[in-house]
Image 1 (tube, rainbow, N blue to C red):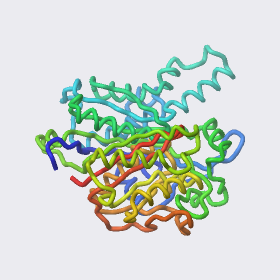
Image 2 (cartoon, rainbow, N blue to C red):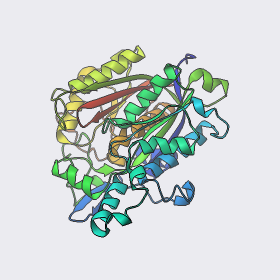
Image 3 (tube, rainbow, N blue to C red):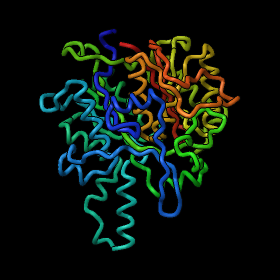
Length: 403
């Protein structure tokens, strides 16, 4: 490990697969789906929900005021910082950055308070409605909670937001703009408006008779994604700093690439040009060749067109057939948090030497020319790729390497 490398010293996860890093990892490795059928205001929908947690873990104020999205991030950040062995009361907050990704952020607060406005009038709208809904509040609340006074912002590249945040945080460390980056993504948009909106786009699975089997990345029977919620957080440091304080290094972030399709507001480029450009940029950033990529945590949402285009791009870029997994079959699609959660799972894949399966894959679609494990596979990839694709054609790719 070179002295100037950026490494991961802490991982925190709050996902439908479990409240915490170890619970999430165990369920992802077992390939156990989390989708359930819910009844919304006017229709039934499929969703992946975070298990109930004790709000007192956040303290009295934090358990009542912040949006559910921010609560997930706070819990995941607590776990990541403890994992890294860092005490916010003891650090130089001016050298700590908080970079977050979210596609919607305060959706639950916004929809709830809008209903209050329509039904009861403006006098009953919460005074916390605006600060809880604003996207910047996600990073701001974490900065306040952990006394981080360095750079702080929330980035939005739709479903690539979490991966974009990790890439930007890595760049800040490489430029010596901070010494520690608390970075990740969070989302809690399983709400009536967004369920209805995505459903009207035809993006959601309607396999209502088989909730657990609904989300089927790369499978011939895939018919759309299932919305999920949760957060993934990483602690990034320069390797020299981490080694100096005796921290455990879980993995390194060695490459980041981003691109725009500049093609369509919801449809990916038909030839996967954007995602291919992001992967090439990440490889160039890492000074690595395609043949060095041994594993991919793919975007893989379970939509017919999206999976097909991504698979074709990966097959062309990586003809040596590395293992390819979509962990969304277990977690659901966490929108703006997906890239951060999947970056965290890629870190654990590299560290633990286990490639998670793709849940619900029983019949690999004929248009998917990839090596997609259906069972947990012992494999310790030296270099792994995580890909993310956002509405509007915004793409991000991260390269994760062993320490």
